[in-house]
Amino acid sequence: MPERLFANPPPTVLTRLIRHKNDLFLEGVIEQADVYGWHLREMDMTYGIIPAVSNLIGAIITDLPDSELASQLCALTIPVVRMGNLPHPLDIQLPAILPDLKAAGNLAADYFADREFKHLGYIGHIPWSHGKHLYLGLKERAATRGCKCHWLRLKNTDDRLNAKKYQEKWQRYQTQITAWLSRLPKPLGLFVYSDGMAANICEWCVEAGLSVPEDIAILGYGNNRFTCRAAPVTLSSIATNNKEIGHQSICMLKELIDGKPGPYQPVFVPPKGVVERQSTNLVAVNHPLLRKALAFIWERYDDPTVRVDTIVASIGASRRSLERLFNKHLSRNVAEELRRRRLEICRELLRGTSLPVEKIAGKTGFSSASYLQTCFKKTFGLTPGAYRRQHADQAPK
Image (cartoon, rainbow, N blue to C red; front, side):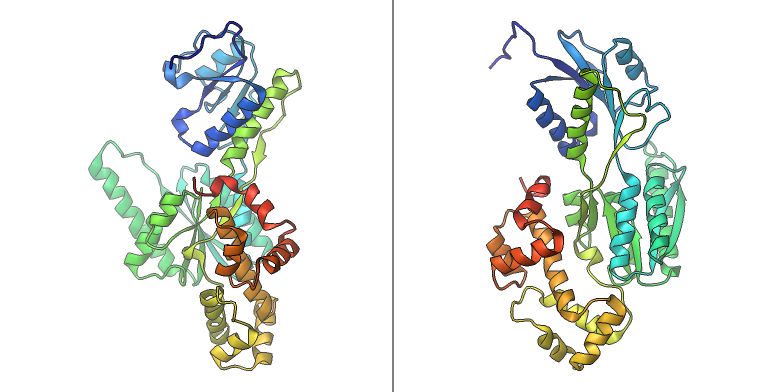
């Protein structure tokens, strides 16, 4: 069916976003543009040339503020908003919506510290890219949580046009990274700047005889669900909030169109949270009885008959001594750890599946959906349904 010709063309916003190919990123833009009744025109379809458009009201791009396209759009005296990864000195001239990378680093440090890791690791590049901000967030929060942060920087070269050099670079990375990881204290919580690199490192750890997560617990960034599922050990990852970045970009453009002043610095959108999978599936403690009890809890959390006495019997210790170990090393008792684990899996199922709460209760060891609802609301301050709505873009389509 041919596109309808408008007698009165709708307000039109130029975009240059398709090349980033992030569905959630684009979905947020589309949804909010529909709210305002705006028509979107993608400039990649005109090879980056600004098309002649009637009723043009603004633009959203991913190009840098000092790019030729940004200059051309600003010369049209229309409001322009940038979506990107990193701040730029000219963001005061071209308002920007960016992911909060330092907050993601903070989140990674808190995640590992909550699981009793004392040593954290990070791998960056020379020169730095967006990974520097992830590292700074990790390092700063690790210091406040009493964790030692180790880091390795690799020389980055763009050898993609030379297949042999490209392969040699990755073989060099594998050698450097596995040698570095082998030298560090164990267990180590490793935060990686992308899921793709995290999957590579997971593969290299397996080849080098380093156990994941027992020796190296790996946390990626981006929560690319296919990459995380296809790794040798399924990868935990920090889920970014790309859909919200898209929403906020359109909302900021609307404010500029309405004559409101732009922000003097970028607007940073924090990540959604950690999506936990096998690669971080442990608590880092060295006491043998405590490790045995935790292993039992993490393997049998879905069994509603498991109680504190069941756990005590499984490891052959007295209840009093086990409770003392939990309180000393984890600052929580046995029942609290069992409930914490069940709620963690519950959150993962709410984010990643469309299962009803009743089935999730059965899969996570809760005696009933109502008891799950009560525990969830008390712990997280919202119902399972509200939590699922907040994370709806992570559920399968």
